Image (cartoon, rainbow, N blue to C red; front, side, top):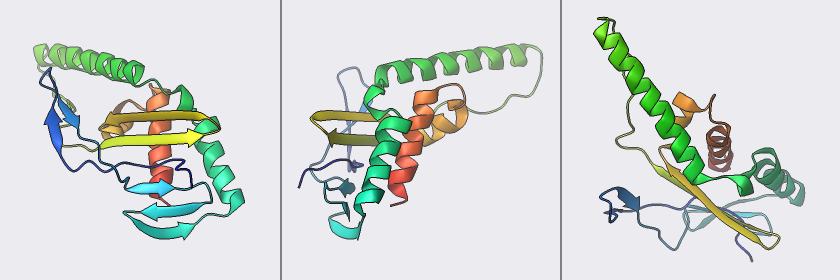
Length: 157
């Protein structure tokens, strides 16, 4: 059966050449949805989606939330831009003696990696701290909100 999607577990973190933490990919995903609708969670069959349920899920992921158009670099740049603007706002508030909202960086978030293989296309999209950044900036960064929606849908299976 062809693997059509899944969240990959990240059992360890490694440092990349630039000193940033990078997730070490493993071979078995935490969630796998096979072409026949079988949902495998942590190596065990969890349920089986009907053909209609599978088609609705794929439509949700690929059409409604534009998974194949997700651009991780653009989303990371947009998040960085929002963080920079927030820091500048905090500095201005500090100069005026106003209290400041605490919302800086995600220090211990999960890295979401989703891979979809469908109709000859394959894409892996992922991001560190999707839930947190989506909560803070999702209204302004639609692809981030879409990736979070996909993650939530997959987690609900």
